Amino acid sequence: MTEIKFYNYPILCGKADEVRNYLIEQIENGKKLFIVTLNSQIFLRAEQIPDYMKALRKADFHLPDGAGIVWAIKKHCNIKSDRIPGIDTMDYLCDEAVKRNWTVYLLGAKPDVVKKAADILKKRGVKIVGYHHGYFEDQTPAKEIQKLKPDLLFVGMGAPRQELWIAQHMHLPFKLAMGVGGSFDVIAG
Ligand code: UDP
Image 1 (cartoon, protein in one colour):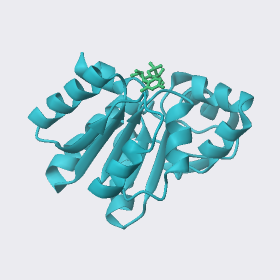
Image 2 (image 1 turned 90 degrees about the vertical axis):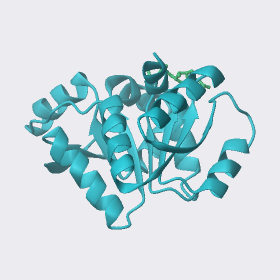
Image 3 (image 1 turned 60 degrees about the vertical axis):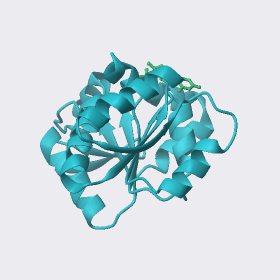
């Protein structure tokens, strides 16, 4: 596994398992993580929206989620990496959460979708301590997260909203926050 700087984004490259184990190690060592699952869509939005680029640069690590990013890293940095999709990383982290008794909060998607995703994950043994849909205008989710102190916070509100929200809420008590796009819709089926 290698960490590179690509357009000033810190990207973890290499074998998916090694990268994911490294994240677990960092959490176990007490580091609070903001993870971005970088793909071409996110990259291009950040080129157009300066505040979004700023938010992405606040992330501790980016993972090469998209094939375009894997290609660009190989071409510009001559580094080979697996594609590390956000949904697979969320899946892996949920398994680790079960093993390590970590709590999880889901933020994003439509009310029925996030509820269904939470129910499905609960059936897998994941300790979901709370969830909230992604169409809020107030501080309700932030207040809930402050109270519930989840270990893992998955934010599925699409780009750029999810990373902007995480960057603005890094003071909240969690161990890892990651934007997961439409993953709750995928889990809910
Ligand atoms: N979403 C949300 N709040 C918003 C806009 C979108 O929670 O204000 C949700 C939407 O319901 C969907 C996800 O964000 O579950 C975005 O999915 P999309 O496929 O657009 O994201 P991608 O996976 O392409 O990043």
